Each structure stands twice: as C-alpha cells, then as structure tokens.
Amino acid sequence: MKELHIQGGNSTPEIQGDWERGVLAMRGDSYPENSFEFFGEVIQWLEDYLGQDGRPLQLELRLVYMNTSSVKAMMDIFDLCEDAFGKGREVRVSWYYDPRNDRVFDLAEEFREDCSFPFEILADGGA
Image (cartoon, rainbow, N blue to C red; front, side, top):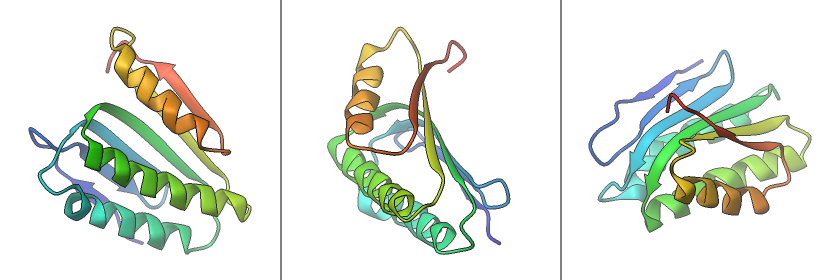
C-alpha cells in the first residue's frame, strides 16, 4: 500500500511507516510549532493501516523530547492502537531510550500505564 516518510528536522522527529512490515517508527525530538498539523499525516496513515486486513502493528519509538502538544498527539496515536487492540488486533510498542535520560523513561512509563497492549521500554545505548 503506501509508505510514510517524514524527514526529521530540528524540532520534528523522523517518521517512517512501513506498510508491508507493519512498522511505524519515530526518532528524535518533537516540538513542532503545530503538532496537530505535523502528526495529522501520521494519524491518517495509522488509521488507514488499522482499517485494513488485521495484520500486526509494531511502533518503534526513539523519541527524546516531546512538548505538551506532541504528547497529546502521541496520546491520540496510542488511543487508536488501544482501540485496535481491543478489537483483537496485535499491537505492540517498543520505546527505546538513552539510559542517561530518566525523563524519557518516565514519559514512556506514563504512556505505558494507560495502555493494555504490550509496551516495552528498553534501554538503547545507540540512541
């Protein structure tokens, strides 16, 4: 179907959506001027993917810093995942963080508390 690639910038993460593999990956800082606009394409890709044939979805996150509006957008993404998981879709998150940055671990932990699907928080020395 369709691949998604958003080049990362100073205030925006790099985002890759691999339709065939069922992987949505995000890497970098996220504090765009308009998070709703920036993440709109990502949310649309995710809605399209989850509306298809029921294949598994894997989110691979290496997010370092997120402003409040990016956190809200990520909550919307996790809500879509939660809804799909509740309908029997295999969904899992792997959130990689630099072990020297406790704030990222704490943020990932807050998200994980609200999710019932598999959600790993993994130390990544190469992040």
